[in-house]
Image (cartoon, rainbow, N blue to C red; front, side, top):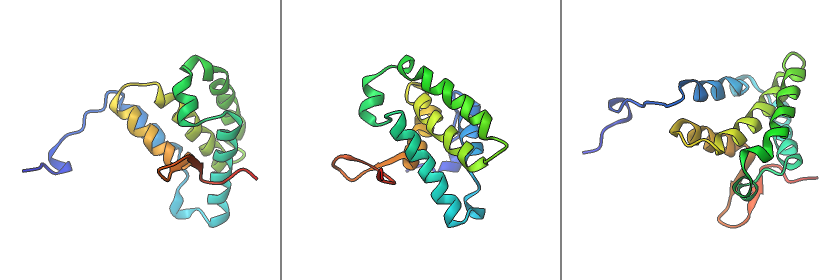
Length: 133
């Protein structure tokens, strides 16, 4: 017999990572179509600029992305009070990169969830949510 989710306590090795990710997302219930499109476009622009794909992440170590992560930290600071949607997009991309290189279960979940915003696979080539224009 399978146990339900409620019966199985989940122990996260980095208790704050998933909570931090949840805190980065805009409140989608209150986000109109224009705000959501802004969020998706910002993610797509960052993913394109920093060449984020499964192949790129797999082909490089975390040190390759350290300058990009540092720059995203700066950008987040700049946008936090100006535009929370853009700030959320920046953190989503940053957490996607950082979570890829962590082996704990919480990080893998965060990587999967952030990946849903960055790209999807149709069984063939990786495709971005918003194709470059």
